[in-house]
Image (tube, rainbow, N blue to C red):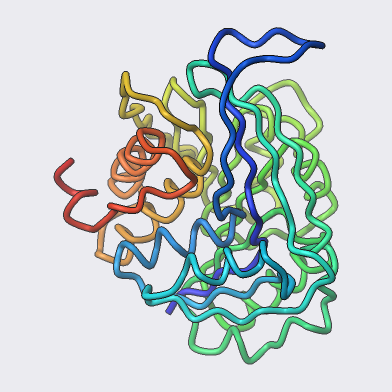
Length: 294
């Protein structure tokens, strides 16, 4: 069983038609889509036929209805913790589909308190996916409960600002930690990747899956071994939103199928490519067969 805990948002994605010009209006297009790291991971898992439970927070409002409807028909059991207003994420993409800047209003996720996180949710869970948007006290509680339940924990630090907060957590009993380059350095407060890796491993991280965008990724193991994972390149980038969430879900899906993490990470790169080729944070056509053969 898989438990996913974290944020659900309504995303506002704006894309410029031309190279972005700062401090002025840019012609382009905008759209609303369901989003949020935890929600995206859960939807991807569901589309990959992985039954999971999603613990999240959103309001009984129009945005919350979009979030609710986005998971209908999938093997995802959602437990909603009430919030005053559903979270939002606004992103500006350039004409090539790459992120220029994003602004996350995570008040709904921040409203979750540790006493709302019920230990019973972790019973019989083999895997727990933790969204780094959670408050640090909630991340700590999820890690403690995962360890007590003997569940493998995966943590996505989400952003540089959120990665900094994780520095205070020790130990970090993680099967896999998934920062990008800047997030890893911010987490360890260093400008040296090797020092940052040691910092992570000294705190109990088993694997650091270092994402380098178009340059692929590297799976570092605490025993010093490393495996480079090539990016699955495409010339048809429509939207980079949700690529990392798709990677995490595809990685876990393949591990559950019996793959080693290094093999699973290769399929995860394909999952990211299938996501950036479509508009929205999740590819609605994603299936296990597509992931394996696309």
